Image 1 (cartoon, rainbow, N blue to C red):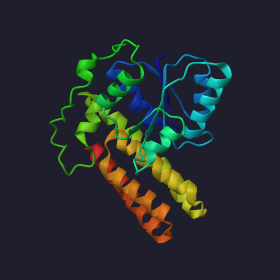
Image 2: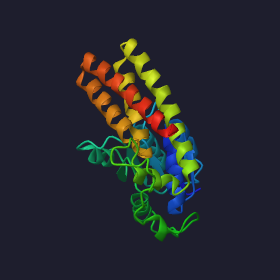
Image 3: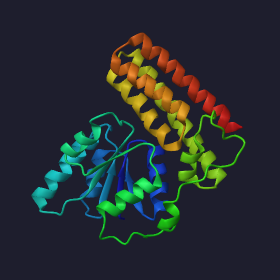
Image 4: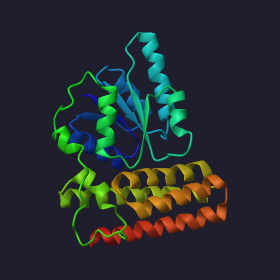
Length: 258
């Protein structure tokens, strides 16, 4: 396969796979950095898209391991592009300093992916399969469904990037996201109860990243607020933000069922 996607969140892997397919690229996925390194070692991939915050081996450590192996084995440099919901100031520069080649923030647009592919894989014929590249880079049209309003909990434009006009697929993607978000929220609460602040922050970040990719804007905002409260070190504020996140997930579930 051409592209290796490394992300510990199943929703993110599914969304990125579909976006790459719509841009005309085949990919395979790895569920964490250790699996990503094993797959990269096969030599089957021309480019790596990786999340940064992962257990066992994060995106920075994966990049360092790949760069070390390239030097040892005298293999050509593999372009590595970070994909993360953490678009704070200085993060892109930090990614480059750690040996990565590029940085893309969530939510992703197919046009962004296409541009990155063109830049880092200039020797590859752009149309590898899936939809024609010209169609893939056009601005998506929001679904003209009465459910989608400026106040709805889902951004129709982002959802259309993944599912196109397939309403069943869109519904299934959102349900998969909700199942994952509920599981991550349970883990967040458990981490808070155990006074494990780093793990609680990590779970809030996981929900934030997946929410960005599927266009669940209210859940994304609530998860971002919870993550920020955790990083600020305010226990009471973190508890309140975690409750608000739970409410946002519940509201999204009601909206999806409609």
